[in-house]
Each structure stands twice: as structure tokens, then as C-alpha cells.
Length: 213
Length: 213
Image (cartoon, rainbow over all chains, first blue to last red; front, top):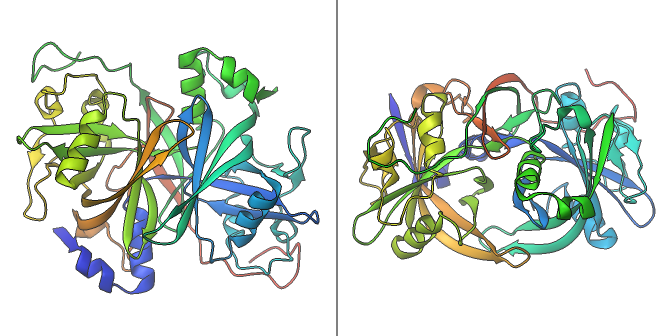
């Protein structure tokens, strides 16, 4: 049976039901740990499902913050240091990655409450997640306030990519299946992925309704 | 072997190599068809991998447009009509969904060059994709220009959700595996997903380094 749900019904839903539903209906989401450091050297780690490609040249990545929540550390550290790292969640570290969403007080490093470890590279003062297979050093570029709901879009530029050479194809494509990167749906569901295929660059057909070979 | 790629190397890469790499390193992406109609009734259909959850209350969804490309129809139709639909790509319609990225002239409807069909509901004048399992009617809210690369973030509010009742759990969670929704990596790779698990709401541990039971 097909269910039709109006905006009016969504607005009246129970908080958690609406949160589960609205977080699921956009499709599969990226699963990334964002790591930062404050001016006193305290590290912070938080999971995000909103990391999104914004452009390749220059290499721009965005993610969405709700500044009035537990994620405030991430925001403040990015604003004060100008640096952060994005680390892919893989299937071996799901439990620890998910645990970073727990509401710890600001003086606590999530690295100390999980089995995830800090790793450092000369390209940035921000910590990387050692257990992540794909790691990205980011430089803060801009914050864009989203007035309708008080969220903030954080845009940054890629400073360094760190990943196994073996998962990069000749044409630059990256095999996330082999990297065991996971996808998120809703607030709390983690998925492994299996590539169906890569499709060739799409070119217009000569005539309508043709079946492409 | 671990490869470290600097921003300087990314900036100097061949166009396609950089595009493949940068589109892959953010993780799994949503796969959605956005359908619109112009003021003369001509429909347009285009695939996007940047549809992102921005909030549940009000229900806000965003996606990123490059207005100087084939996607211009989508932008102009959304601006003039104020309406669009978001339709999940499932594994049965990958080829046709991918084909909507071909550069057709503006006077062509991609519905006529694929096996995807228009479907209409009273909630909006924009077409839905009949073959999609999960469909969302959207109302345009705001466009936010992203200065660093000339892209545009389009924000809209959910007006209606249309999906099978059977894939909605008691708590509002939606089973995208059963809906056969696919995920995208890079520019052209489509993936099926398999849920590993749903994790409980994360609560702080009493002590560092504890193993959560």
C-alpha cells in the first residue's frame, strides 16, 4: 500500500518518528568522522552524515552543522584553528564511530572514550583517525548560515588526501567497497555497499524512446 | 602503499582524473532524479548525487547545482515554478537514470529519451518518476550562491512524501535496502547497499577506554 504523507502530518509527528523519517528519505548518506583540536590541544571527534562534494576545482567539500547541539566543539574548533580532518567510517569501526555522537561534556576527547586513535601528519595540526582507510585534511573556507532552521553549512578546501594507492583506479576513481567505507541511512543505520556497475559517460540519443545499447 | 596527495597535485591533475577522485572521496552519495516542468509544460529530468538532509522540523532538503551546465533546465524550472520532485533511483532504473545526465538541448524532455514515465499527483504540478519507489514533492525555499566555485545550494521544504507503507518502520525509519534505492560513488558508479545494523542512541560512558556492552 502506498502511503502519502503531507507536510502538515510531518509537522505534527512525534519528534523521534519525524527525525527517523526525514533523515531516511534523502537516500544513502556518507559516513565520516570529523576531527578537530582546540587552542589548548584538546581533540574532538564527531560523526557526520552530511559531508557532500561541492566541487573539484578547487576541491571543495561541505557539511551541515547544528551549532546548538553536542557538535558545538567541532564548530568552535574549526573556527578557531581553521583546520579539520574528514575520515571515512569503515565497517570495522562502526560502533566507535557511532559512539562519538554521545553527548560528552566539552572538556572530553571522544578519542579517549572509543578505540579510535589520533594520528598526525605534517600537513595539519588537526588529528586524523588512525583506523580510517581514507583521510582528508581540510582547511576551513566559509560558513554559510541557513536561516530556515539555524543550521550552518561549513565549506572547506581539501589540503591533503591520504589513502591506499591500491584503491585508486587509473582514471582517479576510488573503490570505496574495498576501503570498506560504509553508508548511513536515517540516524543510526550503517550499510556496506556493493558496486553494481560503472556506467559510461552519457551521450544524447538520436531519437526518442530508443533503447540504449 | 599509502598515497598522499596534496592540494597542489589536485590542482594540476587532468580534468577527468580530478573529477573522478574528488567525487569519490566524500563517501557514498544519494542517487536521486529531480523532475521539473517549465511554464510551457515541458518536463525535465536530471540525476543528482548531492541531495542532502538539512533538517527535520521544518523538513528541509538541499542539493547542489552547477548552473552553467546541462542542469540549467532544473534551475530555471525550479525558479519559475517554485516546485520540483525528488525521486530515489533504484537498481531497476540505473541505466535510464544515468542517461538523464546526457546533454540534451533545452527543448527536450529526458522522459522522452528514457523508459522513465511521468506520474502526477494533486500536491504539485511537477512530474514524479513513476518507476521510483520513494518520491518527494518539494517546494523551493531559497537559493544560496557558493562564491568559491559558482555553485548554488538549492533549499526546499518537503510538501509530500509518497512511499510504500511496508518499508516504514514503527519508529519512522525507512528501509532503503528493500526499496532497492542505490548509492553513487564518483561520477558514474552505482551501488546496492546491505544494512549491517542499526545502533542504539549513543550515551556517554562513565569512564574512558571502557568497552561499551
